[in-house]
Image (tube, rainbow, N blue to C red):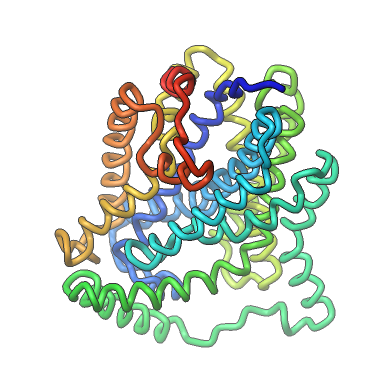
Length: 401
């Protein structure tokens, strides 16, 4: 029975850190803008540079990097199962404890720190992911594609059966929607930016419930990307990039061209039927995500590029800690118990702020990992998972290398 840990895959750590940056560039807006205002599509800031920046973010970043995280979650499940089997441990018990701990931390994060928490959703979908652990790669791929297509297929079918259902339904006029968006922004600024802790927690709980309800429609997409990551891991595609180079190139070209085209249609075209928007959102984003993964993997094989991209591996190895720290720091910046800058920072400075914070996290993670093998929240997470000391002496070599 083998007892040695699997060596860490530096590409996966770097890709996780890269995803963490993209997620933060999106999430920071939700710390300073009302959830309802965003839902109504209200633009609070003027200036061509803000408009261009948000347009580019919508096409290139929004919804793609969180899918990379989802992909890596499924990838990690397979790695943990293989490691558990090699050490003679019960994977089901380990993973159930791991997901339970993730769910508890996610609930604390969502209620007490930031309503946009994704950990809760990952934990819930993770229990469904366990059902697929023994599936062959081909089965995983079929289920993944099916889940990624289910929402646009259902909406398209509904529009064919009832053409009126595919038309765009606008419950409010643009003027009314704008006015309501401004109202919610002013209300939330008074609560998050100036209110008491009790007021903030009450509003955060409302937003957390609303965020969960909004996220349910994306559950098939999340599970689909989990399974795509599991498929890639079982096929060893990112373990052996050179061996699968031609397939990765074809996937990158297909995903990049088709995914970008669909994203451009969704972002730039007005008055699209609901089923067309669903296809652009639920098909275009995963395709572009896979293209990003492919490009990143191919570039990582070049030594010069690898030196550059390896920088992302430091926050990637502590992604759990850094994700939570981003929420804590943004709370201290935008909420009343900190600087109270809610609603006062325009998008261009939000993006710059996110980049600066992430750069600090890169430096912090690098220093931390030179002294300790895992991040503080990773330690807590593993403590729940393994019911004991989660760090083995040999792991210091693997993680800090």
